Amino acid sequence: MKFMLIIATLIFSSLATTPVFSKDTLSDKEVIDILIKKSIRAYSGNCPCPFNVDRAGRRCGKRSAWSKPGGATPLCYESDVSKQMIKNYRKIHGLDSGDS
Image (cartoon, rainbow, N blue to C red; front, side):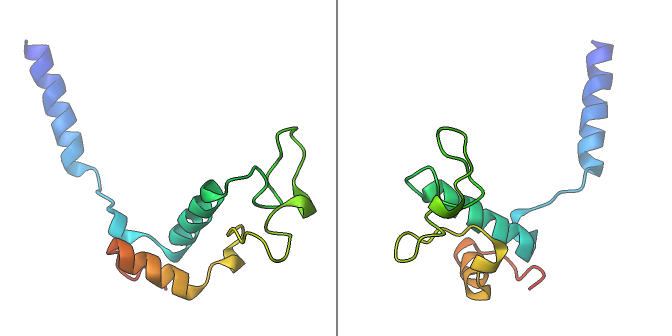
């Protein structure tokens, strides 16, 4: 019983000194990464971006949706994400301005 009390005390004291990071401190880079990952997940095929691989394990390259004009436009690279997209994401999710 005494052993359990010591363990519980150690756990609670470590929690009290552990820094808390909340979602409202996301940097622009973190928001960009989130937007890219969400975009890739939302794509219905298996080749949204040139760096993805197809079912056979081959790199998608120029066969990717991103590489083909007029079709789907997944976000694959940081340069695909505009400042307005970051701003909109922050507004929708109630986040502060981060490092923009």
